[in-house]
Every structure is written in structure tokens, then in C-alpha cells.
Image (tube, rainbow, N blue to C red; front, side):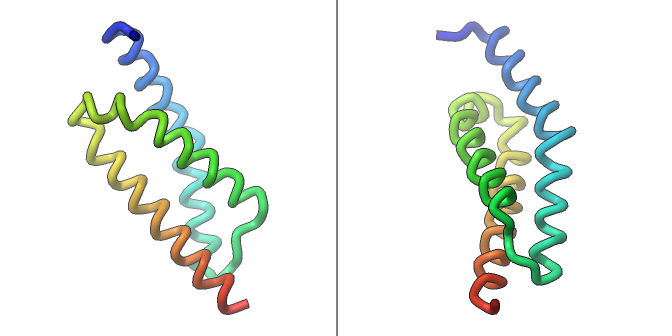
Length: 92
């Protein structure tokens, strides 16, 4: 079992990684699908990895109410992107 300090360090690293790497990529993918493009293989792989990472982080987020709002917003963004990507794929 991880100590609270270890968990805090992991969460800090995850949040920094999300803020500086994952969020900009998510927003780029969102722009892409909002303009009618389909997801590339790289986009799909990135989204798959992101959701897996989010699922691994969920138990820690559950212990930190201050992070639950951002977690929900990211989940909503993921849902918006994948829904629009599916719509785009059906149109092409």
C-alpha cells in the first residue's frame, strides 16, 4: 500500500503530465474532429492510452475530492471527442 506522500507525488506527476502533454493533445484532437476529420491511428492509440491511464488513476482521484471535477471534465471531453469521431467516420 502506498503512503499518502507517495500517492500525493503520483497525483502531482499525473496532473503535471496531463496539463503539459495530454490536455494540449486532447484539444488538438478535438479541433480535428470538430472540423470533420477522422481520427488517425495515432489519435486512437493516444486516446486508448489516456483512458487506460485515467482508469488506473481513478482510485486515487476518488480519495481527492478536489480532483474529481477535473477528472469529470476530462471524461466529458473524451466522450465528446469519441462521439464526434464516430459521427465523422460514419459520414466518410
